[in-house]
Amino acid sequence: MKIIDAFWEKKNLGVDAIEIECSVDDREDALETGLNKIAVPYSVLKIPAGSYNLLCVGQKCGYSVIEVSIRLIGAVNYAKLPSIYHRFVPHLKVETATNEIRERVLDEIGAGKIFSTDRIALDPVFSRRIAGKRYYNWCCDAMDKGASLDIAYYKNVPVAFNINSQPDDKQICVGLMGGVFSEALDKGLGFLVLYTELESCKRLGGQFVISTVSSNNLPVLRLHMQYGFDIKEMQYVLIKHQNNV
Image (cartoon, rainbow, N blue to C red; front, side):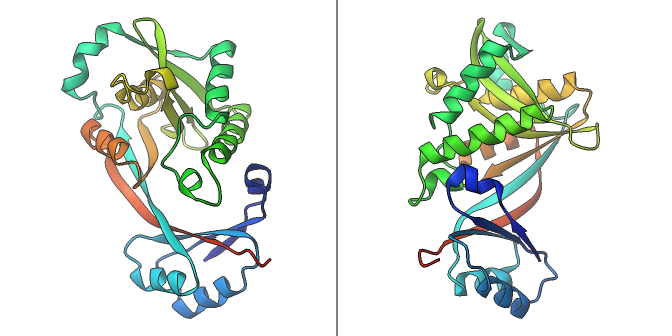
């Protein structure tokens, strides 16, 4: 079990936060003791899927399940655009974002227009606006550290984006975040987020893409399955707010 001071969330969420990461080998009594010592306004508990005994301990200590975090992996040479979308290919291109487009992406993220299914946006204590601020800060930090922002154009109009990084192994690209611009949300072009991620990884010379999807976002999870991604691991994600600290 790891107890992590999530100090970065103070800027994002306005409260002190702790993250607790469990392993399948953790003992129930040790987890209960550790959780009962947590005394911050907001804490997040992550438990390997299938560890029902630890899940019960978390719930006993006042934590509530808000999502299952699903980690997927796709081989660039195997993961393919589903055939239903092939008709779009002649009109598509993926390019590295210009400074102007980068600012547009960050503005939309920061305004809370794009993401609505993550644990911050769904949490009634927070909001989509706060989720947008959190993702804005996260994206700025990632790009300052070298993550690439790529844009998908359909008929020369920017419609989707993806942020990729290669933190360690250059064969592996990690999809940090992707989305569709607000004016394209109802155009049936959501498949371009993953298309952009794969094209970006190819450009960077990577062989595998790793993505993380929330169980609250079934359309995106299905899309990964259509592209040929495999599930690598899953975690229960639980949260707790303490108003008396």
